[in-house]
Length: 278
Image (cartoon, rainbow, N blue to C red; front, side, top):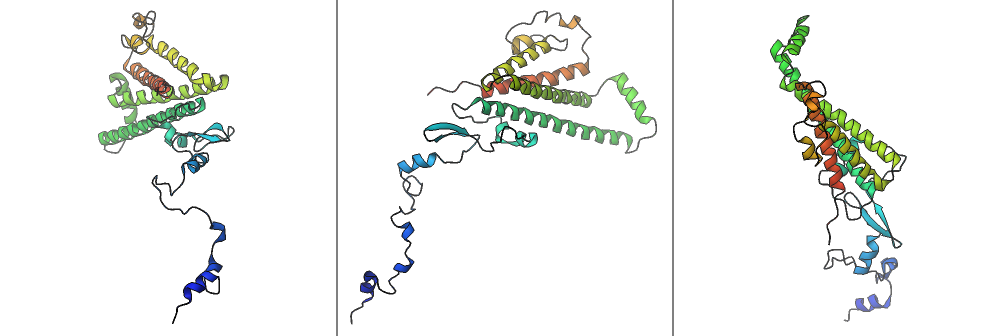
């Protein structure tokens, strides 16, 4: 007896399965992995798909209608205020942030600001840690109890003997926090009065001016100007006699400020470094 199931399947009769056929998907290329691992997408499709790809990393150039436009994740409107703590934790604040070739100046400015915010946060964390350690040492010396007037006596004694290394470390980090606040304010000021293409240039000049001022202070070590400015500062050798003598406290404050300014300048140079030639 002949099996008529194949004939029924080809004739379009009842039970042949054509009722469940997806006509909308007819003629489409099956989504099977191809040699390029992109589910069989053709090179032509790759070009079209690249126009709508979500940007990865700090951003990328996207072609739309033949026009290149820079896109970055987490784009915000100009009127929207970016949370400083979130910005400090973003990829923009990374020491080795990758900026694609031809990245616009606005992205370089953002990478500079985010890194400065991260550095300020790190300095604040360091101050918190040192304060905790100082409280622990204080509790260990007093046995957890402080008699009336005892704290004042210790403060007078400390003033006579000078700050401890822990106190000087606190002073240095607090000076760095103040320096980063001023640096961020200066960047905002420069950005308000210059176009994006000039912001980091003018900001770099401001940082150099600040370093020149630090080099002329009594706390500056010999040769500081030549090392960081590549040029001697007038009367640098006589700076020690031009003002009050340096003290351990003033030297700690100077160190914290100078290190913050130097680090900020290095960041600007990092994000504005010339792109490697092909």
